[in-house]
Image 1 (tube, one colour):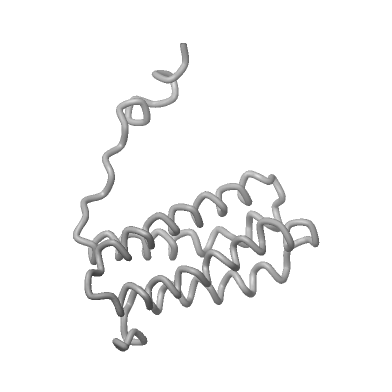
Image 2 (cartoon, rainbow, N blue to C red; image 1 turned 45 degrees about the horizontal axis):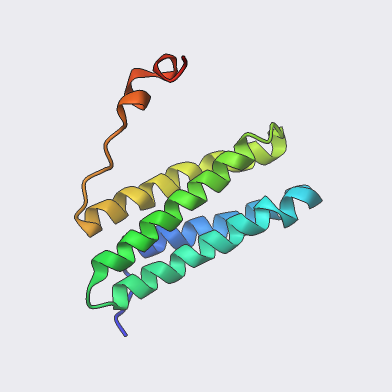
Length: 130
């Protein structure tokens, strides 16, 4: 099995997982057992996917799976932010940059270009309205 402890993407993913373990402890009971448990599970899964991708001969398919899981984690974080709970949303502001950094590192290691922004998004919300 290949060594992974030295990889920057592993270190960042582990930092995100540890951060969420600590942050979720301060959530209200409802958020702790719903979105909080999702955050914890998804962040731990990311660490496992980094290890799995490092051990694989063909890393690109594994890194693509990692990319999908990172996007799912960002969606979960967005859901928490939209909850309008100041204590909950304040606790997730810090790790968002770390998760985005892991996403960017994943894109570089995978050799992929960032996804293009759709025309509707580029023009703004008024182009979506009818």
